Each structure stands twice: as structure tokens, then as C-alpha cells.
Image (cartoon, rainbow, N blue to C red; front, side, top):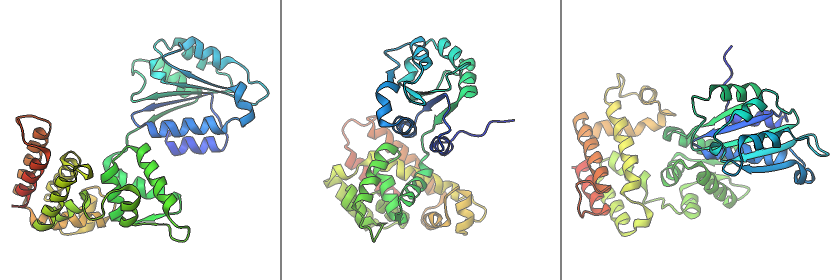
Length: 341
């Protein structure tokens, strides 16, 4: 029978129920979930007065597998468990002693291995099997851009707050998918909300995070979707005068993603139905399809294809390819002019 998927939620549910496993191998490209699980174990398995003698933190660059296994074999002192945390576990090369230990792990040890920005070498099948048999092998995967809005909404909802779609998009565009930074900014926003009104609005986002509610990637995209030349040029002028507020490097992925989806939208069998279009584009809700219905009215499939080509050209030039001296501001103006005319 296939093993159930190991998710952050499933791991945390077991931990909070105090159903501890002998090993937690935490690996992957998203450090946020690795840190959350490791921090919970470090702060909750043992009582504060038990940690001095029963909690050990090691670094993979300073120890070998035999030393980790020896640390894991110790008995706890006046406590039910001992916790051994190994950071930078990817630096441990010869894992045979650990593989041997995991075949008969200490039931009183909670061993946590943190392997960020990568995962176990696929050739080490015996090691992987030993980890899975003894405990938890968790892969922390980077959040996809299309899931970022949902993450923001769920995070705030769990804290008792609500957020409107524009504010969600503003935060996502400005901060991106660095979940550690994103949750830190969301926590700052939450602290600013009055107890009687837990709504996150564009004004709150502007005040607490620093992204303008009027001059941002969301508003620029809206101007382009609606082919509002005046508004688009006003925003570009603002960014040209305030380079710290935004640049071509931030907006190119946003515009490329929109026009890429718009090209796909042109081939939707029921392109005039928001519900059908949302399903076709794998959007979270029909509301998000409105911009594509409008976009198809303002941009033909041929024009969209040309725009995608222009965005690729500007991306290359922004990185210095075939571009001796044109600055980011001028590149952005050239791109917006091409899109709107």
C-alpha cells in the first residue's frame, strides 16, 4: 500500500499530538517549512528546564555521521526524550553509520536533520528507506506563484483577519514567494490592525509594507489590461522617478505571466464564460478570470504573441544582452509603448 503524502500539515498535526518519531529528515528548496518544523520541535518536545542536558544542536560541516549516531544513542537525563538537531545536514557525506543507527533507533531520541536547498542524493536508496521506515522524510517544496495568493489569504484567516483581492495581489507582487519574509511582513500587518477591525486593505498595505496603493504592479497590470494609456504612463513615470518603488526586474515576470495566460485564454472553448475560463487557466476563482476576458477584447492572439516576444527581448536587454547603454527605465517605457500601441 502506498504511503500517505507527508505534508507540513500532517507533520505538525502529529507533533502537536505529541506522537514523536525517532527521526525527522527535513529537506527541500523552501526553508520556511523546514524552520517551522525544526523550531517547533526545539521549543516544545522538552520543557525549558530539560533542555540544558537533553537538547543538542550540531552542524553537518562540524560532525560526521558516526558522531551524530553516537549523540542519538545517548539516553535522556531526567526527561522522557532527548532532542538532537543537525543543521546543514547536507554536508554529512558518508551516511552509512546513520543508516545503521536508523535500523534500530533510540525510541527516546528525536533526531532532526535539516537539509536546505536540496534533497538527499537519489542514489542513497538504503538511507532514504531507513529514514522512511524509522520516521519522517519531509520535502519542503517552493510555493508556486499561482498558489501565493491562496497562501496569503489562508495565513491571515488563520490569524482571524480578512483581506481583499487587490491587497492580496499587492502583497504578492511586492514581496514575492520568499515565505519567511512574506510571513514576517504579514505578522507586522496583523499587529497594526485594531482588535475590532481585522481587515487588511490597500491603505493598510501601503502604511505597513510600504507599497503604494496607487502606483504598483497590480495597478500597472490593470492599466495594461484595460489599455489605459494615460494611467500606465503615469505609473511608469512614477517608477522612473522613484526607482526604489519598483523596476523592470519586478514587473517583467508579472507581465509575462499575464500575457502567457492570455495567449492560453484565446484558445479556451468557452472564452466568454468567466467560470470556464478560470477552470481552463487553473485560476483559483472566477473573479480572477475577469482580466483575461477584458484582455482578449483588447489584445488579439497575434498581438499577444508579439508582446510575449517583446517581453523576452526586454528581459534579455535588462540583463545586458545586446544592450550597451539603455537603462531599465527606458526599457520599461519602450515595452509599455509597444504593448499599448
